[in-house]
Image 1: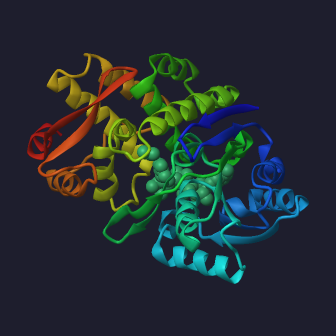
Image 2: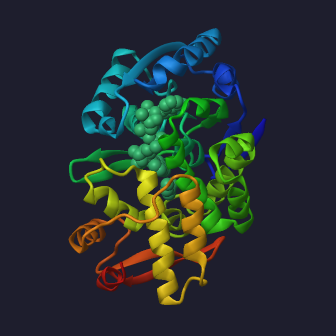
Length: 353
Ligand code: NAD
Ligand code: GLY
């Protein structure tokens, strides 16, 4: 079993990584939270038929009372209506503050269920059981929980750390290729911003099969990097912004195509390549970096360029949550494995895209 402790004072928790771990959900939770009686298990319509029964059995074997809430799969469920539904389910189930929410699914389930947990009764414990690559390396760790509003993604949310993250890499075997590739964008991001060695390892892997042969190492490396960053900057006021590498322009692509044509990972991949290109033009990024990032993204089936009008860039940069006043912080690489935030005028960034 691989284990990483996210050492946030007063809110520390473990990430466990182990094939087959789904079957141990109940035992892991019982050991950590002996007084919990009820569990609201939140999952989605794709994940439920694959894995919900195993998790339910594991929980009931440990004498937890379980109620399962299934949301429709997809980003559109990350909304206020579904949040209200989960609050009502929790209330009807008679949950109190010592009961818990379990999020079984991808980032949509994790963000929605986590936000329900952060707000029901002013906060109940929750456990993340991520089942997509993106959720296993990124969204299940760090406590950002949210729903989308008509005005934009993740606009209502909280910082609410889970009590435990249980990662079963076997769940990745049922992921469609495009969803797997999507997660690879975030995996590549960690190599780019923090570890040249890991970047070279990913280059050597080169495809999904090889990544899966080394999945324990991949998940452990990504989670360890994320844990380190979150420990340093839980509230996202400093170095946590490095995790937004590729996301500023990525958001522009997602928005420009109304969150339909390109997935988050595809948009982030193109955004990472753009950030490198801009960094090279500014003299902040070592020459040749763009080409290396571009080749690695392409190897995993991710786009390295997405067409976008200046108007769409402008509107995305205008509402970017990282923007302050008329300036914006763009995350660029100094070289593979090293990143920094560059503050620039939004108008200057628009000239460079
Ligand atoms: P997702 O949750 O929509 O999952 C993608 C698809 O895979 C869905 O159709 C889902 O039903 C299916 N699926 C999940 N697990 C499966 C499995 N094991 N086998 C087969 N199918 C499976 O999307 P995602 O990419 O996991 O997450 C995206 C969300 O995460 C976005 O809402 C994004 O805003 C959020 N996010 C949050 C953070 C954070 O820090 N909280 C970070 C990054 C992304
Ligand atoms: N996914 C970005 C963050 O957790 O800060």
